[in-house]
Image (cartoon, rainbow, N blue to C red; front, side, top):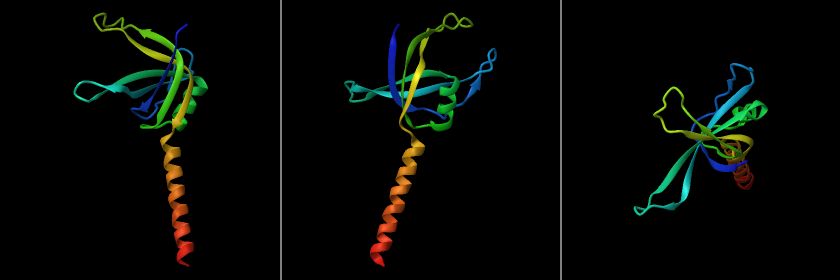
Length: 128
């Protein structure tokens, strides 16, 4: 078994879908991750990785993850072939067994708003 870990920022909001055969929820997360090194021109290359989540994990991702938030996914590597277009190069995705929101955008915004409100309250008390 090949286990893979990927960390990156979501490129779009999570869209929950239903499997036609089983009726169970799933979602495809797409993340962008910059490489650590730069090329000769000083530019970092960005990789785009697809992650498939199922069931309750897909529902949690749809509820809490939004475009731009940082996500770490752990799962199995799966090769995808395209039978309808045999000339198309095979791709891969991660069948996630674990997903961690390492920096949820909504939570970050809430913390920033809370700290701003606390700063205003402290300034108001000092002025009084």
